[in-house]
Image (cartoon, rainbow, N blue to C red):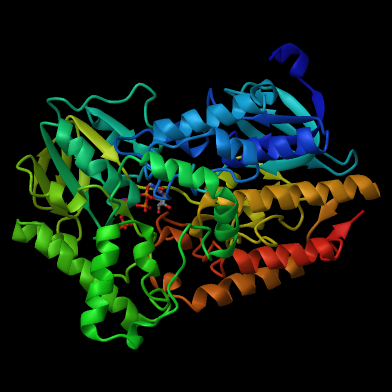
Length: 538
Ligand code: NAP
């Protein structure tokens, strides 16, 4: 792209981010509505989350045939995944395949980070600036920045003095990191840390895992796909498309209707055993009340704890790993490949930070209250300033000079996770208040992207210039988000990133919509069918 010609250029739409959301939004608005669009992307290639997440073991935990765009029959027939769960490199190949097939890269400005976006009320446009001081104007601003893209390295005293190297998993070097012969320390045992531990331990001289909160994990049982299954998926894509729309989380499996109380102890154990052998996220679909009923949940939690104790031979490690303080699936449930088994290696150590917290990092490694750990590399698998972080980072300023940071001082306020009061013509794909992170993301993304497309199409046809939500709608939707969340065990986990509790000082508000994709889709469809009367259109 010729940057000289780009500066001060006006577009119909600026889309921020070239991941799953940004690419499909470009296809919808450029190719289907004929609008003049530009995608601005910080990285030097497409991929979004998967551009940055190249850490050892990085793999999606949605099954590959579901972790796909479903909008194009042709694409579904042309692309073939190789494994049950797609690895990060294969996902980037897929996204590049999509970008080439639909000729998307010519409208993506890579290596540019949006550093501010201000709404100009007089000119009815967004004025957008990048870190390279390129300015754009656009009628619509669409954020496609992902929910988990703002890496969080905790502020631990002395990190700047560390003489080795340190990395955050969500910002992994493109050329990888060699652990050969190295003493490695990893902080964090969420979905990411649980994937990274076995792979790092295989390569490193020694790995010390620093665990603050013990976590559940179920085996992923990843495997190469058989030729039969590859054919089956292509033959049955229409069936899967409907299934993914129907299931509450957009996954290719149904949640069982039975309650834990419906079955006897032995049958329950057999059901869990079968689900454990099958592996994957569907373990939580074994019963309908696992995420709503504490007693029911306890049976699944106890089952997994017993598996940890069976698997991990070092009794001290087993006790630390199985001392889990929250209900199963109350936090995002990880799935793994040989996570607990890895603690049986002789080059691994596990530190329980609750009884032995980190006091500082020094030149040589990590100091805890009781011990010093000499390290060459520290891996931070410490998660993200989720959902709101990527949006707040962009310095978005709406009407009357209202900063998004101020508007969200007490937590995000959105209508449907799609629009923010005071920020006209701005749409937030998978924004806070939408099902997003509680679902299989590409399915939630397609629903949002198509809704935004239809809304803009409606505005174009009716010659409306602006669309805006108001504080009352955002408040009512916020209440709905809380009400549905409070019917589950999710908000009871006080240190969860769903609540923003992992970031010191972040307002604690339950952010994703837990009412399920079908119900959410219905709400959005009704609004569309009602000509967007819930919004102000001018
Ligand atoms: P996460 O779930 O937030 O886990 C972060 C880990 O770091 C937790 O164990 C946390 O402990 C620990 N931690 C944070 N700050 C710390 C500190 N100051 N000292 C010690 N420990 C600290 O982050 P994540 O594992 O990156 O996962 C985030 C989300 O990304 C997942 O929930 C999932 O939605 C997504 N993800 C998906 C996949 C996939 O599809 N395969 C893979 C990876 C991630 P506490 O629990 O005590 O806070």
